[in-house]
Amino acid sequence: MSDQFLPFAYLQNKVVQFEDANVSVATHALHYGTAAFAGMRAQPDAKSPNHMALFRPELHFKRLSESAKLLGANITEDEIASKVADFIAANPSDKPYYVRPLVYASELGVVPKLHDVAFDVLVYGVYMGDYMASDGITCCIASWTRSEDRAIPLRGKISGTYVSSALAKSEAVNRGFDEAIFLNSRGKVAEGSAMNIFMVKNGVLITPPVTADILEGITRRSILELATELNIPIQEREIDRSELLLANEAFLTGTAARIAPINTIEQFNLPKERPVTTALAEALKNIVDQHSDQHQDWIVPFSARSE
Image (cartoon, rainbow, N blue to C red; front, side, top):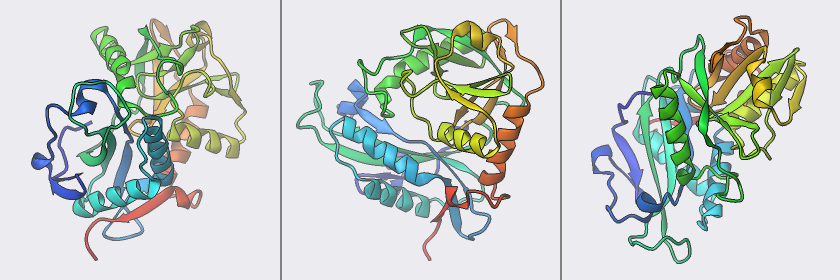
């Protein structure tokens, strides 16, 4: 991901220059991870001039609203959509970028609490090309364990959860891998450092269930819908570590990466032929690039400049 930020951000109910989008050093969310966020890809809309297209934004707005609710913040889907729309209107572009809305505890103070705390919404973005190598990545099994829902609300995309993700990602890179794969507290495969995971065995697409301490990914949901339409058998069930190492195919999914095929897990090389992964990746790409008549409602245009 590029670190070239978009020129404008949204903060405290208005669009501001990115360099002016600052918060206090005493901000509650900065100290305690009391925030929830979303990540969305925006790209020039092939069918609507002067618009940027977002992939399934209504699902992102819904999940962010529900994530905020877990922290005690009442931020509606419509409020989030309106702020993202203002942000996109201020940032027309002829190349794709990543949109990051954040609902955060804006209170100033040193007490870790969620009652009597003010929240605000900010939005910023970065230009984005390919997030991971399209020809496949290498993964290790993280020494860190995926958090449990009884410790932190994993149904939400809570910023504090991502401390373990950062630890696992850096551990993987420092060991010479591209990505990390978490096991949960029961020793079952959970997800990547910030992506969902799928494997294929004997033609069956398998992914951990939502009860395996995973984030309910929007790309994950889309892949399951596409697999059904392509008549690919699906199982949502627990996956053992050894089972994953012997998979016929495996891949990670997320908003930034979309589908990232896995070539190697630890010292185990997966087969180079991956027909299921390829079929799903092509189907998703055709929808995202607006080259398919399928799921045109998944791509939603937002005005990129005043009209």
